[in-house]
Length: 268
Image (cartoon, rainbow, N blue to C red):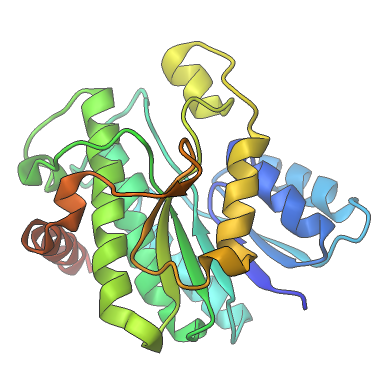
């Protein structure tokens, strides 16, 4: 049966490779990107794949919360049901590390925007839906002042903390929803895969990006993830595993969620 699947950051890297897999199987793809020309190019390429289903495109800069809100509204306006949301878009290094609102871009794109988008799209997703959040093997204790935009961090620190933060809220929200909403799982797609982000950050070609696409496809659709809500899958070891211990600390995780909610409330 064809599924309706939204993929953020779907115009290159793991997101694009995953979109190609879904499109080839005839699923309806809601493809997000931040560059209209690139979105048009990828839309045409996906639509040309044998067996491809419907391809829709949505443009938004996820470092801008107003654009995240607009993205959610557009999806809700066009669809009554969403089967899968893959929060894939991510940032490691950037010339402009601080958003116009004063937040670190890594926390905004990698953590806060996915939280907002997920919350806004929950009404479209029933108990059989799935939210797949891109985590990483790089996870480091979250500095709440940095998350709040009150302290600067290096690229590596900001990235690792933002990836732990999304892993933390994935667990909190997954446990809160229980069987009353979509399952929410955090996935490390694999370390040092050949994405543009890895190439820009580390200057290396990286490994087979298909490794990351395959696990995201499985997390979105396969039976092995049917009871994976609030869990963390480590594709480096090929199994469900324990994330950074902070993600298993309910008190610390709740603090992170409350701060994200406060940030969103201030920017309404």
